[in-house]
Image (tube, rainbow, N blue to C red; front, side):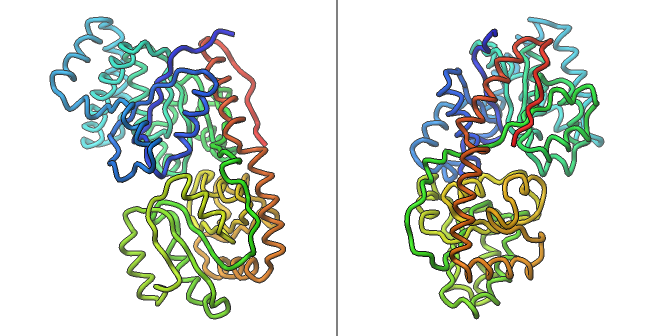
Length: 416
């Protein structure tokens, strides 16, 4: 099998604390001997870099928008591409116009994406890139699609959800699937959504590659079970944190020793802290901000139950991390979560937005520490087998190598 050459790995912001799974995937590919050069549309603010590893990754990443804001560099990139292959440049410009969303504002943004794509395309040619892989199928994937069209360098992308599935037509998911070599879908649910918004002839390109964790990073430690709950995630509406806060007001009466730590940050942090104070939860709830992977692992070692009351998700890596640490999880029955968490085996699945079922689930596990321990052990076995980043990156590498031939059609992978 012909092996892929240097790979440009693109996403909207890289690295950042909320997307450590992308960093792990890149590290895994490099361990397999692939040359992976990271690219990011925007430069992530330094406050989102947790630990020396992320700061090093940031220093070695090409920032597309930053480069595109230099008028001389932008014009030179596009002029070189036009001079190199006028017909291909014209087709790419037409592709950009055909795949724009309706409305003048969307058309303006599409031309901005085209401008960024020219800078990325020139960068890839200068660096000898042979394949472009994009993670997250919204704006950065539009840039990837157009950069591929401008440069002739093939591309692939990882499809997550849920946001892309809210507006699949705006982001032209159909056109992206049609033009890509392959799509890495993070779950069966995700793949089914991709099938729903693409031509049947393109379904053969849709493969399942889980996001994954390093189980050894979360080796369980012997501990006496208490009543410490943990949430890890972005403090934004989709995560359902207000439902958790409302639930705590009743739980604290039957479980006075209850403590809750919330790791993460986001646009709703101030409002959530104010809500916790209003509900009189100041002594129970602790908002600690972003933490490094190591710090999250250390906190999980002292956690009794992991809670994620999301309204919409892909397959949350934070759940995988908790399960790897043998912590039972309580989360919602949405999207790809049931593919990770079996209700009653690895934790409890509740109805999204329903504080009554969330309260009952938390009370059940706090009241039955033996059952909680049993669920934690089963969860670790599950993620070590089916969501291990070492196994998943091997499959992604096989796809990257296998699709070097544009006419190849690899068997669709049906992950457990």
